[in-house]
Length: 208
Image 1 (cartoon, one colour):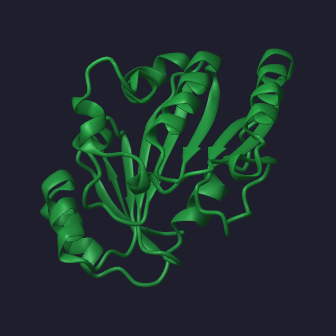
Image 2 (cartoon, rainbow, N blue to C red):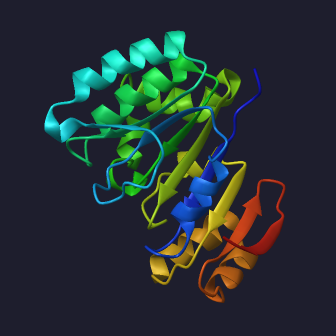
């Protein structure tokens, strides 16, 4: 089993972040996507919609796929994009499965500091962040806004891809977490450009 990694991706709508993720997961043979954004349907896989009452169908399909299939691509749309408990349940499944790629879109909707301050709750999220790599799970944590994302998320990231951000609070967050050089580069980004930060301190500008 290959060790997994945590990758943090942030940027305004239309900046190129989803395109980068979809390119990165193109060859993934075992893929799970958590997709609160209902208008987005570009991810490859079999779609299940919690709003349409398909949660139990998804769980049955999941149980079959993870146990019998070398390849699977599953996309789950939660009924309520703000429901951290629903996200935690899926994180538990992904962690138990192991050896896969997991994409969590729109994380600002359901990840907050209270989750990591809770004792005895949201253990699926915590385990996936801190120990998912030992299970061979590579996670993409994707958001439009940096501000408000718990430090526990970015502190576990090996890589961060920062696309265009304009709100002062977001830029302050980038500076606090990824350094002044990253902020200055983000402020100068053109269309579809991004700053690639690594936990070794390396900062580069690239294009999706």
